[in-house]
Amino acid sequence: MSIVVQKYGGSSVADVTRIRKVAERVMETRRRGHDVVVVVSAMGDTTDELLALAKQVSLNPDRRELDMLLTAGERISMALLSMAIRELGGDAISFTGSQSGIMTNDRHVDARIVEVRPFRVQDELARGRIVVVAGYQGVSYRREVTTLGRGGSDTTAVAMAAALGAEYCEICSDVDGVYSADPRIVPAARRIGTLSYEETQELAESGAKVLNAQAVEFAKAHGIAIYARATSSPLPGHDPSADGTVVRRDPPRLPGAVVGVTSERDVLVLEAQLGRPKDRPPSERAPANDRPVADPGQPEVGPLLPAHNEMLAFLDKHHVGGKQLHVTGDGRLTMVVSRENLHDEHRLRAALAERFGDQSRVVDDLAAVSVVGAGINASFENVRRGSDALAAAQAVSYGAATSSFRITWMVERARVEDAVRALHQTFLEQPGPLVP
Picture 1 (cartoon, rainbow, N blue to C red):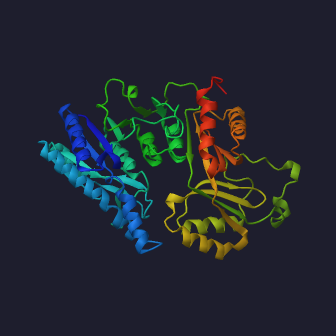
Picture 2 (picture 1 turned 180 degrees about the horizontal axis):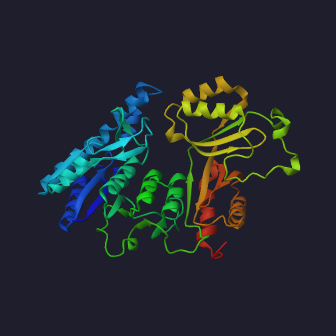
């Protein structure tokens, strides 16, 4: 029998009634002749509640102890779902991340999966059982419990699907796929039937909440099709894109089209002035008219100064992962950081001030808004159209960055929803050129 991996998010298992509905859906999948592995998140807002509890005890919780606490949420879900399946006549067994063979590196709070050893899962599937796995968690080579960061249950599911050679991986939530924008902000947003791995990863890294970026990375590496669907929807039929979103290689779409607009409100911008061209030996300095023009999608222009490396080492020490890094030839460093990944922000700010003083500052009133699509930066037309749309909406841009699949503008946090609506109207509600 073919193997299907299903992942159910926190809203899908938020209470006993919903857990029973998930159990019924899992049993229907089994009756269709599939071996089934189910990955579950913590119930409802359990993770947020546990994190808030930790913050009441300590403003800067130890990352190892935080992992020990937060992984309890998924263990509750997996055990309850296994019980519910058994009540329906199924034979189910639940496993933690470590029991199911999810091996990670030795980082806490934001670990990455390095290997999956699904031997126990395979043994139980061979016995005809449904296997329920706790998402979001694994075990390091030092036998320490680790967590995979926000959305980590997606990563667990896709990594398990790859290790088992599953037919597909179904990511089930309370929405019926990936939308061109958040429907709560843009009423005209529409569901996207198919997406490429690269487009989906850029959407996820730019703030979209439907799929996890590391999960898509796994899927791309192993060629696993992802079906993003609503838990309340029927099981995938002949055309899964008809009532959900399918993520795979090369969707049938012309290059240059914007497929989605997304935003991330809660970001910090770290700015530092760590050196100037005169600090370099004359042989390393070029005349002003010979210096290259910075490409905003590239990390730096000119060689890194020792002070830059010192700053980057400082950020690594404090477990700060930047989303966009720019280092320019005049010694200026700018980095965008997601606040949700900072569990010790107060300590970081204090250490930053102590070490770098007035050479650095943290900007805390901006948000990132992005448009995503394959080939959208083949020319500068989309950058110009987007910038004009933001200006017309009075959402002033304080910087822009690009990649092959994305354009991101930094705007005032108070205007981010206006910015999303303006970009969606420009790129997705108005007719535009078919190619750049």
